[in-house]
Length: 281
Image 1: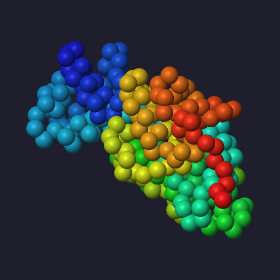
Image 2: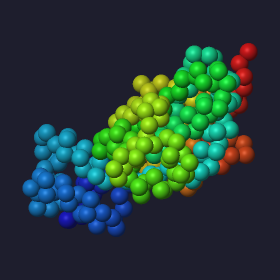
Image 3: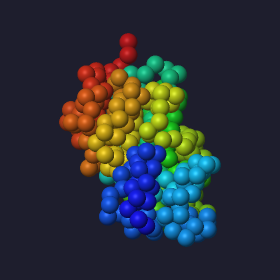
């Protein structure tokens, strides 16, 4: 692969997904795109770049971008955001009028472990809550750039290895049913979720407002201008008293003035100058 090919492919990936490929990641291009080259009968990445420059290359460009997207996930990852969700949920419930759904977005949801972790918290809170909480409708939207991981998220089936990564046995037995070598989320858990293909670099306004947004370990792959752009867009979709959860190694400080840290919490942000959630009159 000549340097011009690397620059072209890296530029296309950044434009389409926001991901930044460094000069020393040529090996990753070779390893991840090998199946695509074989499928298309292309001898090299140089040949791929030439094909991508031709007409009708959009499906090929999308396939390439998806193969170069990192899709790492496990249940209740990092723990703390989900503990905060348990505490924040009653406040949101009291602050919302009866009949209004509480909407939660898992952005960059990968194969769905985060969305189903949220769903388990909701299901257990409703099972123990009063009649008003039991009647509350919750909507979890999971979005990702990659179609293959979304198909898996919709199927809601996980291997033994995947359920062992962060999912306590008690919740596994309560919310999943074993089928052969896989564990599938029960119907009541899947009913909370909806999965859609989406790109965080595109216009997000059609998604509407969310009470809570999880966008964790996604910004890691962006450069600073892209982080600022995405954080600003997410802030625009967040309810005035809502919360945004970022990954443990991510921050909004110094990147956007549309978000501010939630007092006493690490990795949790709210719209700048927002009022805390409180019961409506």
